[in-house]
Amino acid sequence: MQVHASAFPALSPNRSAAASASTAEKAEEPKSFGHYVPGYTGPDDGLSHPQFQMLCKTLNKVLIAGCFRMEVEGRENIPKQGATLWAPTHPSMFDPPLVAALNPKQMRYLANVYVFDGFRGKMMTWGGAFPLNRENPDIKTMRHCSDTLKAGNDLCIFPEGGICDEQKDGHVGPLKKGAAYFAIRGGAENILPVAIRYIQNDKKRGGETLVGALAATGVAVAGLAAGAIGGFPARVVVSTLAGAVTGAYLAGKAIYDRTDNPEWFDPFPKYFATLNAGSLGAAAGAALFGLTSAFLPEAAPYITGLSGLTGAGCTYGIVKGWRDRDIAKIVIGKPIPTAEFRQMGVRDGTKALTVELHRKLGAVTSQLSGVAYDDTREKFRGKVIETLAQPPAGNP
Image 1 (tube, helix red, strand yellow):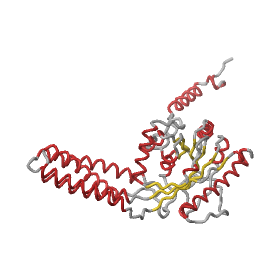
Image 2 (tube, helix red, strand yellow):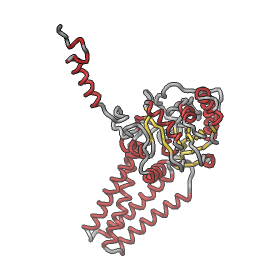
Image 3 (tube, helix red, strand yellow):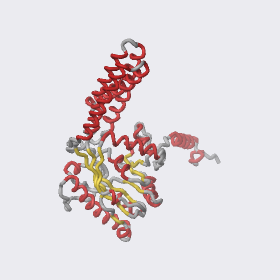
Protein backbone atom coordinates (compact mmCIF):
# COMPACT_ATOMS: atom_id res chain seq x y z
CA MET A 1 0.00 0.00 0.00
CA GLN A 2 1.35 3.41 -0.93
CA VAL A 3 1.26 5.93 1.84
CA HIS A 4 1.08 9.61 0.94
CA ALA A 5 2.90 12.08 3.15
CA SER A 6 -0.13 14.33 2.94
CA ALA A 7 -2.08 11.81 4.97
CA PHE A 8 0.16 12.68 7.91
CA PRO A 9 0.35 16.45 8.33
CA ALA A 10 3.45 16.24 10.49
CA LEU A 11 5.27 14.46 7.65
CA SER A 12 3.93 16.60 4.83
CA PRO A 13 6.74 18.57 3.12
CA ASN A 14 4.48 21.59 2.67
CA ARG A 15 3.33 21.56 6.30
CA SER A 16 6.88 21.02 7.49
CA ALA A 17 8.11 23.96 5.44
CA ALA A 18 5.26 26.12 6.71
CA ALA A 19 6.02 25.14 10.28
CA SER A 20 9.70 25.94 9.79
CA ALA A 21 8.82 29.32 8.29
CA SER A 22 6.47 30.03 11.18
CA THR A 23 9.17 29.08 13.67
CA ALA A 24 11.67 31.31 11.88
CA GLU A 25 9.23 34.22 11.92
CA LYS A 26 8.67 33.78 15.66
CA ALA A 27 12.41 33.65 16.24
CA GLU A 28 12.80 36.93 14.34
CA GLU A 29 10.07 38.74 16.27
CA PRO A 30 11.41 41.64 18.36
CA LYS A 31 11.93 40.69 21.98
CA SER A 32 11.48 44.19 23.37
CA PHE A 33 8.24 44.77 25.27
CA GLY A 34 7.63 48.04 23.42
CA HIS A 35 9.02 47.11 20.01
CA TYR A 36 6.01 48.76 18.37
CA VAL A 37 6.87 52.17 19.90
CA PRO A 38 9.15 54.34 17.70
CA GLY A 39 12.45 54.93 19.48
CA TYR A 40 11.45 52.76 22.45
CA THR A 41 14.04 52.89 25.26
CA GLY A 42 12.07 51.35 28.11
CA PRO A 43 12.66 47.97 29.78
CA ASP A 44 12.76 45.12 27.26
CA ASP A 45 10.80 42.78 29.53
CA GLY A 46 8.21 45.39 30.52
CA LEU A 47 9.13 45.22 34.22
CA SER A 48 10.66 47.84 36.51
CA HIS A 49 14.44 47.89 36.85
CA PRO A 50 15.46 51.00 38.82
CA GLN A 51 19.13 51.87 38.41
CA PHE A 52 21.44 54.80 39.17
CA GLN A 53 19.18 55.99 41.98
CA MET A 54 21.37 58.92 43.06
CA LEU A 55 21.87 60.08 39.48
CA CYS A 56 18.13 59.91 38.82
CA LYS A 57 17.31 61.87 41.97
CA THR A 58 19.83 64.56 41.02
CA LEU A 59 18.61 64.82 37.42
CA ASN A 60 15.02 64.91 38.64
CA LYS A 61 15.77 67.83 40.97
CA VAL A 62 17.49 69.74 38.15
CA LEU A 63 14.57 69.03 35.83
CA ILE A 64 12.00 70.32 38.31
CA ALA A 65 14.06 73.35 39.36
CA GLY A 66 14.41 74.44 35.74
CA CYS A 67 10.68 74.19 34.98
CA PHE A 68 8.55 74.78 38.07
CA ARG A 69 8.48 75.87 41.66
CA MET A 70 7.11 73.14 43.90
CA GLU A 71 4.70 74.19 46.62
CA VAL A 72 3.66 71.15 48.66
CA GLU A 73 1.04 70.84 51.38
CA GLY A 74 0.49 67.68 53.42
CA ARG A 75 3.93 66.04 53.43
CA GLU A 76 3.12 64.74 56.91
CA ASN A 77 0.45 62.50 55.36
CA ILE A 78 3.01 60.35 53.52
CA PRO A 79 3.09 56.92 55.22
CA LYS A 80 6.56 56.14 56.55
CA GLN A 81 6.15 52.37 56.64
CA GLY A 82 4.40 49.69 54.61
CA ALA A 83 3.62 49.56 50.92
CA THR A 84 1.61 52.53 49.68
CA LEU A 85 -0.13 52.98 46.36
CA TRP A 86 0.19 56.62 45.29
CA ALA A 87 -2.82 57.88 43.33
CA PRO A 88 -2.17 61.39 41.91
CA THR A 89 -4.32 63.44 39.58
CA HIS A 90 -2.88 63.84 36.09
CA PRO A 91 -3.04 67.35 34.56
CA SER A 92 0.35 67.17 32.76
CA MET A 93 3.12 64.92 31.49
CA PHE A 94 5.33 66.56 34.10
CA ASP A 95 3.43 64.93 36.99
CA PRO A 96 5.65 61.82 37.38
CA PRO A 97 8.85 63.79 38.19
CA LEU A 98 6.92 65.80 40.78
CA VAL A 99 5.57 62.67 42.47
CA ALA A 100 9.03 61.08 42.39
CA ALA A 101 10.42 64.09 44.24
CA LEU A 102 7.81 63.73 47.01
CA ASN A 103 8.54 60.17 48.07
CA PRO A 104 11.75 59.44 50.01
CA LYS A 105 11.15 55.68 49.71
CA GLN A 106 11.64 53.26 46.84
CA MET A 107 8.78 53.58 44.36
CA ARG A 108 7.76 52.13 41.01
CA TYR A 109 5.65 53.92 38.40
CA LEU A 110 3.15 52.63 35.88
CA ALA A 111 3.30 54.72 32.70
CA ASN A 112 1.99 54.69 29.14
CA VAL A 113 4.32 52.61 26.97
CA TYR A 114 4.27 55.29 24.25
CA VAL A 115 6.21 57.80 26.37
CA PHE A 116 9.20 55.47 26.79
CA ASP A 117 11.23 56.99 23.99
CA GLY A 118 14.64 58.63 23.68
CA PHE A 119 16.49 59.85 26.76
CA ARG A 120 13.17 60.36 28.55
CA GLY A 121 12.48 56.64 28.32
CA LYS A 122 15.91 55.84 29.71
CA MET A 123 15.44 58.17 32.65
CA MET A 124 12.00 56.76 33.37
CA THR A 125 13.37 53.22 33.34
CA TRP A 126 16.29 54.13 35.59
CA GLY A 127 13.85 55.78 37.97
CA GLY A 128 11.71 52.66 38.32
CA ALA A 129 8.94 53.22 35.75
CA PHE A 130 7.54 50.32 33.75
CA PRO A 131 5.26 50.44 30.69
CA LEU A 132 1.56 49.75 30.23
CA ASN A 133 -0.06 49.26 26.85
CA ARG A 134 -3.42 50.84 27.65
CA GLU A 135 -5.08 49.50 24.51
CA ASN A 136 -3.90 45.93 25.07
CA PRO A 137 -2.64 45.41 28.66
CA ASP A 138 -0.11 42.64 29.16
CA ILE A 139 -0.67 40.12 31.94
CA LYS A 140 2.98 40.59 32.98
CA THR A 141 2.28 44.24 33.70
CA MET A 142 -0.74 43.36 35.82
CA ARG A 143 1.19 40.82 37.85
CA HIS A 144 4.13 43.17 38.29
CA CYS A 145 1.88 45.83 39.83
CA SER A 146 0.72 43.38 42.50
CA ASP A 147 4.19 41.89 43.01
CA THR A 148 5.69 45.35 43.50
CA LEU A 149 3.34 46.07 46.40
CA LYS A 150 3.73 42.58 47.86
CA ALA A 151 7.49 43.17 47.95
CA GLY A 152 6.91 46.23 50.14
CA ASN A 153 7.65 48.87 47.50
CA ASP A 154 5.44 51.87 46.86
CA LEU A 155 3.66 52.02 43.49
CA CYS A 156 2.39 55.09 41.63
CA ILE A 157 -0.64 54.78 39.35
CA PHE A 158 -2.53 57.73 37.90
CA PRO A 159 -6.11 56.53 38.51
CA GLU A 160 -7.73 58.86 35.96
CA GLY A 161 -6.02 56.72 33.33
CA GLY A 162 -4.61 59.72 31.48
CA ILE A 163 -4.97 63.47 31.15
CA CYS A 164 -8.69 64.10 31.16
CA ASP A 165 -11.09 66.89 30.30
CA GLU A 166 -12.34 67.38 33.86
CA GLN A 167 -8.93 68.72 34.93
CA LYS A 168 -9.57 71.89 32.91
CA ASP A 169 -12.44 72.83 35.18
CA GLY A 170 -10.78 71.91 38.47
CA HIS A 171 -12.58 68.58 38.87
CA VAL A 172 -11.32 65.02 39.20
CA GLY A 173 -12.20 62.86 36.23
CA PRO A 174 -13.82 59.43 36.50
CA LEU A 175 -11.33 56.86 37.76
CA LYS A 176 -10.30 53.56 36.30
CA LYS A 177 -10.46 50.75 38.86
CA GLY A 178 -6.84 49.63 38.43
CA ALA A 179 -5.42 51.67 41.31
CA ALA A 180 -7.92 50.28 43.82
CA TYR A 181 -7.67 46.78 42.37
CA PHE A 182 -3.89 46.59 42.70
CA ALA A 183 -3.95 48.18 46.14
CA ILE A 184 -6.19 45.31 47.26
CA ARG A 185 -4.55 42.49 45.32
CA GLY A 186 -1.04 43.67 46.17
CA GLY A 187 -1.79 44.13 49.85
CA ALA A 188 -0.94 47.84 49.98
CA GLU A 189 -1.55 49.18 53.46
CA ASN A 190 -2.69 52.57 52.16
CA ILE A 191 -3.71 54.35 49.00
CA LEU A 192 -2.57 57.98 48.96
CA PRO A 193 -4.58 60.71 47.15
CA VAL A 194 -2.43 63.47 45.64
CA ALA A 195 -3.73 66.52 43.77
CA ILE A 196 -1.52 68.46 41.32
CA ARG A 197 -2.24 71.79 39.65
CA TYR A 198 -0.05 74.17 37.65
CA ILE A 199 -0.53 77.92 38.02
CA GLN A 200 1.16 81.03 36.75
CA ASN A 201 3.71 82.68 38.99
CA ASP A 202 2.50 86.23 39.68
CA LYS A 203 4.57 87.03 42.77
CA LYS A 204 7.20 89.77 42.59
CA ARG A 205 9.79 87.96 44.77
CA GLY A 206 11.94 90.96 45.57
CA GLY A 207 14.66 88.87 47.22
CA GLU A 208 15.33 86.89 44.07
CA THR A 209 15.24 90.05 41.98
CA LEU A 210 17.94 91.50 44.24
CA VAL A 211 20.03 88.34 43.91
CA GLY A 212 19.79 88.63 40.12
CA ALA A 213 20.84 92.26 40.21
CA LEU A 214 23.80 91.51 42.47
CA ALA A 215 24.91 88.59 40.31
CA ALA A 216 24.72 90.74 37.18
CA THR A 217 26.68 93.50 38.89
CA GLY A 218 29.35 91.02 39.92
CA VAL A 219 29.78 89.77 36.37
CA ALA A 220 30.01 93.33 35.02
CA VAL A 221 32.57 94.37 37.63
CA ALA A 222 34.66 91.23 37.02
CA GLY A 223 34.70 91.87 33.28
CA LEU A 224 35.57 95.56 33.53
CA ALA A 225 38.21 95.00 36.22
CA ALA A 226 39.86 92.15 34.35
CA GLY A 227 39.89 94.22 31.18
CA ALA A 228 41.37 97.28 32.90
CA ILE A 229 43.91 95.85 35.33
CA GLY A 230 43.91 92.07 34.87
CA GLY A 231 46.67 90.05 33.29
CA PHE A 232 46.46 87.82 30.25
CA PRO A 233 45.21 84.66 32.05
CA ALA A 234 42.54 86.59 33.99
CA ARG A 235 41.21 88.22 30.83
CA VAL A 236 40.95 84.91 29.00
CA VAL A 237 39.20 83.19 31.93
CA VAL A 238 36.72 86.01 32.54
CA SER A 239 36.00 86.41 28.82
CA THR A 240 35.40 82.68 28.48
CA LEU A 241 33.01 82.46 31.44
CA ALA A 242 31.10 85.63 30.58
CA GLY A 243 30.89 84.51 26.95
CA ALA A 244 29.44 81.17 28.04
CA VAL A 245 26.71 82.92 30.04
CA THR A 246 25.96 85.25 27.12
CA GLY A 247 25.76 82.45 24.58
CA ALA A 248 23.66 80.23 26.81
CA TYR A 249 21.07 82.92 27.46
CA LEU A 250 20.80 84.29 23.92
CA ALA A 251 20.59 80.88 22.23
CA GLY A 252 18.29 79.41 24.88
CA LYS A 253 15.97 82.42 24.83
CA ALA A 254 15.79 82.41 21.02
CA ILE A 255 14.77 78.75 20.91
CA TYR A 256 12.39 79.09 23.85
CA ASP A 257 10.51 81.94 22.16
CA ARG A 258 10.28 80.07 18.86
CA THR A 259 9.44 76.56 20.06
CA ASP A 260 5.96 75.26 20.80
CA ASN A 261 5.14 71.97 22.46
CA PRO A 262 3.31 69.62 20.06
CA GLU A 263 0.90 68.72 22.87
CA TRP A 264 -0.29 71.23 25.48
CA PHE A 265 0.11 68.73 28.32
CA ASP A 266 3.74 67.84 27.48
CA PRO A 267 6.25 70.58 28.41
CA PHE A 268 9.31 68.41 27.76
CA PRO A 269 9.99 69.17 24.04
CA LYS A 270 10.28 72.92 24.64
CA TYR A 271 12.28 72.41 27.82
CA PHE A 272 14.85 70.09 26.24
CA ALA A 273 15.07 72.18 23.06
CA THR A 274 15.89 75.22 25.20
CA LEU A 275 18.39 73.23 27.26
CA ASN A 276 20.14 71.90 24.16
CA ALA A 277 20.28 75.33 22.54
CA GLY A 278 21.59 76.89 25.73
CA SER A 279 24.35 74.27 25.98
CA LEU A 280 25.45 74.85 22.39
CA GLY A 281 25.22 78.61 22.87
CA ALA A 282 27.37 78.42 25.99
CA ALA A 283 30.07 76.52 24.11
CA ALA A 284 29.95 78.96 21.19
CA GLY A 285 30.00 82.05 23.42
CA ALA A 286 32.89 80.72 25.50
CA ALA A 287 34.89 79.93 22.38
CA LEU A 288 34.16 83.28 20.71
CA PHE A 289 35.08 85.53 23.64
CA GLY A 290 37.78 83.29 25.11
CA LEU A 291 39.68 82.61 21.91
CA THR A 292 39.40 86.21 20.74
CA SER A 293 40.93 87.41 24.01
CA ALA A 294 43.67 84.79 23.77
CA PHE A 295 44.69 85.44 20.15
CA LEU A 296 44.17 89.21 20.07
CA PRO A 297 46.00 90.35 23.23
CA GLU A 298 45.96 93.98 22.17
CA ALA A 299 42.15 93.91 21.97
CA ALA A 300 41.74 91.67 25.05
CA PRO A 301 41.01 94.53 27.52
CA TYR A 302 38.10 95.74 25.39
CA ILE A 303 36.81 92.24 24.65
CA THR A 304 36.94 91.31 28.33
CA GLY A 305 35.09 94.47 29.34
CA LEU A 306 32.47 93.91 26.65
CA SER A 307 32.01 90.27 27.69
CA GLY A 308 31.46 91.43 31.26
CA LEU A 309 28.71 93.84 30.22
CA THR A 310 26.92 91.37 27.94
CA GLY A 311 27.35 88.61 30.52
CA ALA A 312 25.84 90.87 33.19
CA GLY A 313 22.68 91.49 31.18
CA CYS A 314 22.34 87.83 30.31
CA THR A 315 22.96 86.76 33.91
CA TYR A 316 20.06 88.92 35.02
CA GLY A 317 17.93 87.46 32.21
CA ILE A 318 18.67 83.90 33.35
CA VAL A 319 17.85 84.71 36.99
CA LYS A 320 14.66 86.50 35.94
CA GLY A 321 13.51 83.54 33.85
CA TRP A 322 14.17 81.19 36.76
CA ARG A 323 12.38 83.56 39.15
CA ASP A 324 9.27 83.80 36.98
CA ARG A 325 8.82 80.09 36.20
CA ASP A 326 5.36 78.66 36.89
CA ILE A 327 4.30 76.96 40.11
CA ALA A 328 3.41 73.31 40.57
CA LYS A 329 1.07 73.19 43.56
CA ILE A 330 0.57 69.83 45.26
CA VAL A 331 -1.74 68.76 48.07
CA ILE A 332 -1.20 65.34 49.64
CA GLY A 333 -4.35 64.06 51.28
CA LYS A 334 -4.65 61.72 54.24
CA PRO A 335 -3.92 58.09 53.33
CA ILE A 336 -6.86 55.72 52.88
CA PRO A 337 -6.27 52.43 54.79
CA THR A 338 -7.17 49.46 52.61
CA ALA A 339 -7.77 46.81 55.30
CA GLU A 340 -11.53 47.40 55.42
CA PHE A 341 -11.82 47.21 51.64
CA ARG A 342 -9.70 44.05 51.39
CA GLN A 343 -12.18 42.33 53.70
CA MET A 344 -14.97 42.99 51.18
CA GLY A 345 -13.27 40.82 48.58
CA VAL A 346 -11.59 41.92 45.36
CA ARG A 347 -14.71 42.78 43.36
CA ASP A 348 -16.72 44.70 45.96
CA GLY A 349 -13.62 46.12 47.64
CA THR A 350 -12.27 47.49 44.38
CA LYS A 351 -15.52 49.28 43.59
CA ALA A 352 -15.93 50.73 47.10
CA LEU A 353 -12.28 51.82 47.30
CA THR A 354 -12.50 53.51 43.89
CA VAL A 355 -15.50 55.54 45.09
CA GLU A 356 -13.68 56.52 48.28
CA LEU A 357 -10.54 57.45 46.34
CA HIS A 358 -12.57 59.64 43.98
CA ARG A 359 -14.04 61.51 46.94
CA LYS A 360 -10.65 62.00 48.61
CA LEU A 361 -9.05 63.13 45.36
CA GLY A 362 -11.98 65.47 44.83
CA ALA A 363 -11.42 67.00 48.26
CA VAL A 364 -7.71 67.74 47.75
CA THR A 365 -8.30 68.92 44.17
CA SER A 366 -10.92 71.32 45.48
CA GLN A 367 -8.30 72.82 47.80
CA LEU A 368 -6.19 73.72 44.77
CA SER A 369 -8.83 74.74 42.25
CA GLY A 370 -11.36 76.35 44.58
CA VAL A 371 -14.09 74.37 42.80
CA ALA A 372 -16.37 72.47 45.18
CA TYR A 373 -16.38 68.70 44.83
CA ASP A 374 -19.53 67.35 43.21
CA ASP A 375 -20.33 63.92 44.62
CA THR A 376 -22.88 63.29 41.87
CA ARG A 377 -20.26 63.29 39.09
CA GLU A 378 -19.38 60.02 37.39
CA LYS A 379 -16.76 58.12 39.38
CA PHE A 380 -15.84 55.22 37.09
CA ARG A 381 -14.10 55.24 33.74
CA GLY A 382 -14.16 52.17 31.55
CA LYS A 383 -12.37 53.19 28.36
CA VAL A 384 -8.94 54.56 27.55
CA ILE A 385 -8.89 58.37 27.67
CA GLU A 386 -8.54 60.24 24.41
CA THR A 387 -5.85 62.90 24.21
CA LEU A 388 -7.34 66.36 24.61
CA ALA A 389 -6.91 69.05 21.97
CA GLN A 390 -7.35 72.22 24.04
CA PRO A 391 -5.24 73.09 27.09
CA PRO A 392 -6.76 73.95 30.45
CA ALA A 393 -6.05 77.48 31.66
CA GLY A 394 -2.89 77.75 33.72
CA ASN A 395 -1.52 74.33 32.73
CA PRO A 396 1.88 73.88 31.08
